Length: 388
Image (cartoon, rainbow, N blue to C red; front, side, top):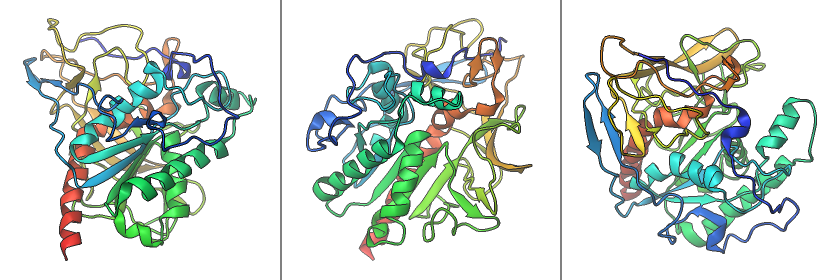
């Protein structure tokens, strides 16, 4: 079977350039529905899209999983998307691009609607061009404080006007995760509002803990999650392939000083190795554009859903190795069966994988089914907790 790969650059995290720039505009008015990518009062938002999935088993047979039913959930999810804007300013505007903020919220947040009301604010993030400049040792005038302030204002608006005492889950990836991590530290950790925290999913950035401990680094009162029946805790990890562990120049999961990045395996929160329930996009992108189509089966069979799942193929375990703590991903491909032997998701420059990025681009895709299930279990535990 062919090795599936992505040939992309960081710039392809988003391919539409908006002509208007609002980096210096006033703080967004989150009382306006247009400042939310996903909002329960907007029936046609970025999260209200087809989530049907083609299940591909090892023998190459296909079956269809319909979109999950969105009941009237008892808890909320507050989501912050990763770096996805290709606006040429240092901070993005407030006009969502289909191949940027909109598609990313769809891929990373929409499936949680089966368990929670999803609130996903637009924010003036540090853009892809700005990050590329920073990596070159240059600057185009980006300001992370603008992004963090927008997230805080959106959070404050949500608490005042939408929350009404409900339990909540905070979900973020990469830049969005780092902003939520800081928001939690300043606004939730050790404060009365922490009682409403069902969990936080902080992926693709570090939530640090002292070695051998579950709490006490980034957060003084919020521990790592070690069970789906545990609430008020944090799920966090950065993923790398087993055959491509983090090199010395890796970007994610690095141990600094006395603290180590927490690793909670969504497939086995209590420890050990577990099977991932992954959901991959078939739309030519997984938070980025893919240059070519490579079939999921041999012989090729048409896949007509926007997502694919490959049960029994992808596994994960937390690993501490050298100066890194991370989620190790292994793919159990079999060249003798009819299913693809590998998954897309590596960061490529020209014709080479850049191991320093690991599988950062698909952290959420890899673990989506597990995360949604965990949130559902935590929501049920939280409901019991409220009745006590």
